[in-house]
Length: 76
Ligand code: SF4
View 1 (cartoon, protein in one colour):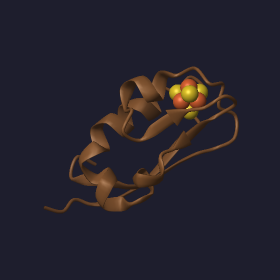
View 2: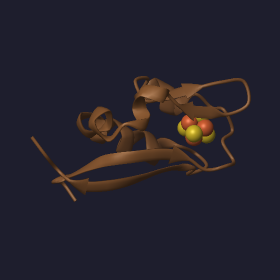
View 3: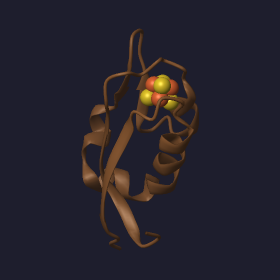
View 4: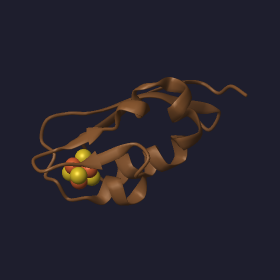
């Protein structure tokens, strides 16, 4: 929903280390040698809220669809 913001994001097993998510949203995703990880600062809901659009796009672009997220009502 348009008035929902992302509060939590994680990566399921199966990342193929394609770099797409880091290119789309480098504040949240960091591609390492064998998998992509969520940056430590991006484990906080308040950090994620205003990056909702970029995270949604990254999830759509992930070729193996392993980027998952939870949303909640928008604030602020
Ligand atoms: S877009 Fe998907 S497959 Fe590619 S690095 Fe990110 S999580 Fe891994």
